[in-house]
Structure formats: C-alpha cells, structure tokens
Image 1 (tube, rainbow, N blue to C red):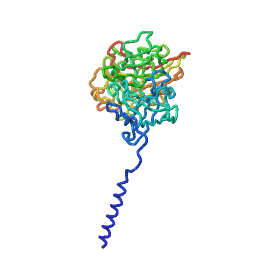
Image 2: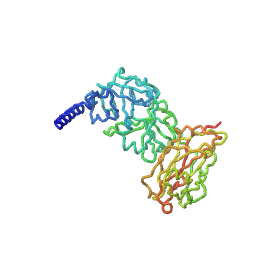
Image 3: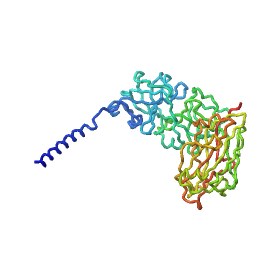
Image 4: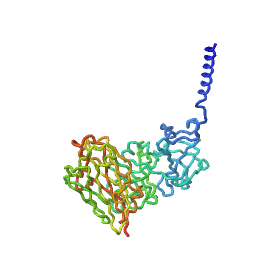
Length: 436
C-alpha cells in the first residue's frame, strides 16, 4: 500500500512539473529589436517591417552618430548604432528635413513598424518613418569609435556599415598638393588596405586643407558605383574626426648594427629634447642589422619581466617654451621563435617611480619567421589624459616590457625594427605641439 501511495505521489509530482514546464517560456516578446537583427531581415529586396518579421517587436533604439548639421551625411538621413552582446551594428534612418534636429549623442527610440527596409544608393536604410514615431530619450551620450584597420573594413563591410570607426595612421594616396582640400573622394592607406574618404562639397570642412597623414574617424557607408557593385566609403562628420599624426620623435635604424648601447631619436621635433632608446638590466644587446636588438630571458609572466628589468625605454622631454599632446605610438617588432610573445607599453610621469599601462597586453600568434619585423597596430595615446598637455616640468618615460618566452639561449631575440630604408622609422611617437 505504501509503495502504491508513493507511486501515485510521484506521478502527481511529474504531472505538476510537466504543467510548469509547459508554461516555462511563456511571456511577452520584447518591444525592441536589435539593429543587427533588423539588418539580417534584408535579403536583396525591400522589406515591409511589422511585428511578425520583427519577432514581435516594433521599435529600435540607438545613439545618433551622424551630424547632418555639418553637411557631411546623406541628405535627410540620420545614422543610428547600438550594441548588444558586444556586437555593434548601425543603420540609416530616413527622416527628411528633420535630420538636422538630431545631434551626435542623441539616444532615440523609434517605432519602425510600417517602415520600409531597403538598400538605396547602396546603403541599408529604413524609410517611411514619421516624426512622431521618434522619441528622444537623452542627449550628449558618448560613443567611442571602434578601432579597426582598413583591411578589416574592406573585408567586413556589412559589419561596420553605419557604425562609428577609427582607422589609425592613414596616408593619403597620392600625396596631396599643398592646397588640396577634403572635398570629394580621397584614397588613404594604413598599410593594410586602401579606403576612400568621402566629403560632400557643402560639408563645413570641405575647404579645409587635406593632410598627408592622419587618423581618420567616420561612418562607413555603401555606395553603388553604377555597375551593381556596392563599395564602401568612410564619411567623417566634422574636422575634429581627423587627428593629425605629426611625428614628434622617431627612430630610423637603417644601417644600425643592433647591439649599440643606446639609440638616439633620428628625427626630433624642435620643441622636444633628443630622446635616447635604451635597455633595462634584464636584457642583453644582440647584433641584428637595422634594428635595436636584445635577447630576452623567458620571463614566465609580467611580474617576472618587471622584476627582471626586461624592457626597452625612452623618454619624452618637452622644452620650456612648449606644451605637447601625444596622439599615437607606432613600432615595428621582430620576435624570434623562442622569444617572449606578449608585451605591453607602460608610462611614468614621476621619473620611473610608478608606471601605468598603455592599453592592454598584446600577444603575438604568427610572424616569427619574418626577419624584417612586423608593423604593430597603432597605439592610440590621444585618449590618455596624462599624455595630453605635457609641459617641461613633466618627465615622461615609456617602457616596453615582454614576457612568455620558451628559451633564453636560442632564438630569444625581441627587437625593435627593422628599418628597411633610410626613410622608414621603426619607432615613432606622434602628436601636436603648442608654443608659448
């Protein structure tokens, strides 16, 4: 009898649990759809948006990244982007004459039910949106541009279309004439690929002089070249989207033996003192042509590298009549197969008593057989407040630490360089100078 009672009890519990499971996922769909999911609805022909194809949603949210007031945006268009699960996606919204009412940093909720998703002139957009469908949530939200290379943009245009991106160390091709302006289409390369920079003739910075090199921020937008080819262009929003990469200090190591005790900057801004590249006590000079080279110990981790003094070092010293703001650091590195594979730059403002990180550690995964060295990703210094408005009373030291080697006696070279020509710098610090 007891067994029968227990069996009936278990059957009853299973029935209750089954009922609960049946309603487990029961709930209302979210009223908001991610921009990435909206984009995926387009399959080559226009789509009428509704709650059925938007998974029960009717709204999108995002931050305005375009600036219609500046004049360098498609007419009657605002560009919106948002991020979900570490994925950032954007889209163009056609709003007509009210485009100038929306400023970069505006957070919006837009009812897009009844809107039309299509590609017009190459760009993916949502049209037929009424003014009363748009609600302003807040203003002055900060959007940080995604740091990408030209190659990443060219190879993944759908990922970056209608989002805010930044491409470092771009060189205009061909070199612009002294009086050439931004107006029109200009090609630039960061060494990985070439991108078209687009400026409308009526943009408020169209008549500004085009620099030979700069870091370019903007919104990638497709355009149709007339042959059914959708190509990508980068649309800067205003003149401040271009950061001039004027070299302040650089080291051209062409012809060096590699094992010199120190290496002085070969190009030095007149408002800075000559800088000396040197080694920490934990590394040993190594002969390697057109480089500044050393063998490194294994250094199992960062703490070991710092304790051993396994670093390269140089200083930035400003003369009394100037104030300097740093924008970028570029370096070519050659790392042998058994050498440390992870490195980080650090800086000190107190004569080396304490150091702070520049970015995050970077680990090599390939390129160990490239004897010419590999140009490393440009390091953005413009967002580090400590490295802006540096005066003569500040002693700025940079160090490059490395760790994670597999041998201290064979193929353990970790080198700055090579400089393959008399015009190629292996280490460059860029920025701007103001004089008193």
